Amino acid sequence: MCTNHSHSEHGTPRPALTSLVLAAGLAAAFATVTAPTAQAADNGVRMTFVKNHEHPDHSTLTVRVNGETIASYRAGSGIGASTEGRDSCRTDKGWLPNGTYRIEGHERHRDRTIKGFAIALSDKKCSDGTLRSDLFIHSEMTADGDQGSTEPTKWDGDQDYRSLGCIKLHPDHIKALFTKLDDRGWPTTLEVSG
Image 1 (cartoon, rainbow, N blue to C red):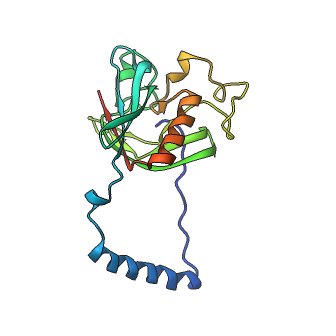
Image 2: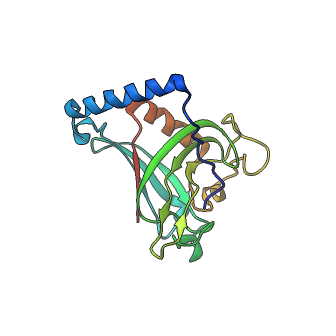
Image 3: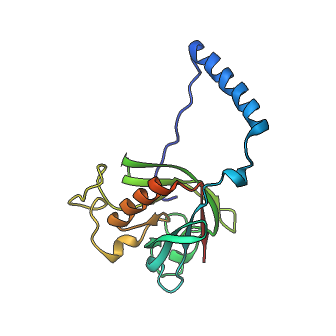
């Protein structure tokens, strides 16, 4: 777990919406026949997080478009270089397990425990089966993306790259990341390795 994170709620569709939902379902069924393959429709944008075993708070988040690196940022995950900080099965301490994560959404004005710019990631089981959940790429800022006066809304320096498992970026870097992805297209997954 990185922090508490609530998923969206699904209600029962109203009668007026039911016909729209059915029409959309039929349109999707017909579109599937002529739609390009997922490979052809891919926007070519890839995001990776590579762990630095010697200095976890000097790991790297990289964005590539069709194999070309367009951005690379210093990033951290976990509580630091201690054994438990590099243990991907240690909830609220260790860095993220290796593998593929779905990007489940992004927002600029998140106002929960994690505030401001945030990218939600899917849950992941580590090697011993422990579920790591409530995972994000984020920074330390207020809900409007500014710097606050107290933790965890104020970026104080190198120690702020440490996390409870989430990937953390400097505030300027996460804003630059959002700008690049808005411009080039958002990836659907994050690859974690190292």
